[in-house]
Image 1 (cartoon, rainbow, N blue to C red):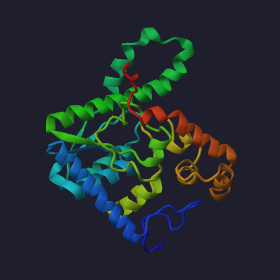
Image 2: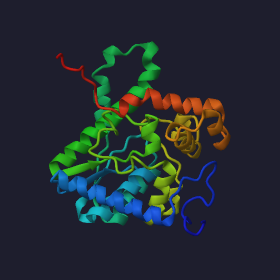
Image 3: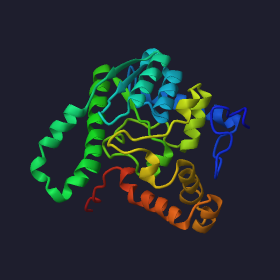
Image 4: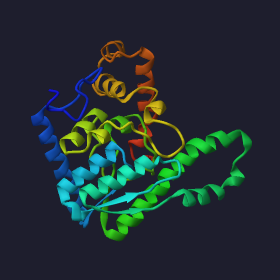
Length: 284
């Protein structure tokens, strides 16, 4: 197996969720067909992908080019000051290597204006939360607005870059990076996204790059989750999606019961992000 997955980890602990070669090729065929079908159904001229320099947006861009051709894929880079230069550079490199057009729009000024418009609602006690979640969510929603501004102007479909692991735990901003026309990676665990990317020829350094959200000034996604991605994938696959008892999941995933309960809590509390807004049933 190492030769098959030479651009991903030769061994993944605690649970290997990667596809066989036949499964992988079939899955990629389905993903590219899905993108093509959605673009055709929308009568769009192509697809837009928000490029962050991370593996999810990189894999999505590669799949879009496979499905539509480089001339029909448009990249948008929406950096903030907290974004590492490496991420912006990687995003531009992906666009250039794929041969797709792209725009770079810096969003700090826009976000600052929105936040300043509500400074009257901020007090000293809430300042810490304001500088963290509120800023991050507002930044994500500004990016969504700009994605659709460009996509509407160019008559393009907005492709989401969320994977199954992140969507299942709510690691997405409602009406922010969750505001998209479709999610090609939505049924792939993080391991599987890496495998798809490697198969499509993405450089190993990008395949194994440590994921960061790029919304506020913190280090990694895994710090936000409280567990590493491989453990998260295992708990989701075994317990949340597979129904394996929590104690067995903890043993197979080499995790604690508390880790399993933490992932379940994230999944349950984020249910509202995976369902459309509710309405009361009409009176009979």
